[in-house]
Image (cartoon, rainbow, N blue to C red; front, side, top):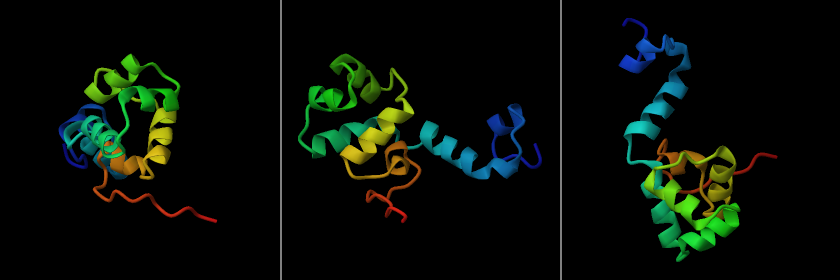
Length: 106
């Protein structure tokens, strides 16, 4: 397994040159979890699941499944959630613990 960062990278034959993607994947899959983070962000904003679902243009049931981890969150919805809560996608998926959004480039 030389040159690989973890067992699944070896199994999938992903070399260490994809280090950022591997670390990101590890954090998403095994870290605190984006599901609890999106729930906490919603509750901190005093929004209901129905409110956020309307903003994402999905049903309340679908959004509930996002929060519980039954459904994966599409990238478009992740972008909208980050904008809604004024944070970064990296924070939502667990790559960073820095809640503030990155400054926009010119």
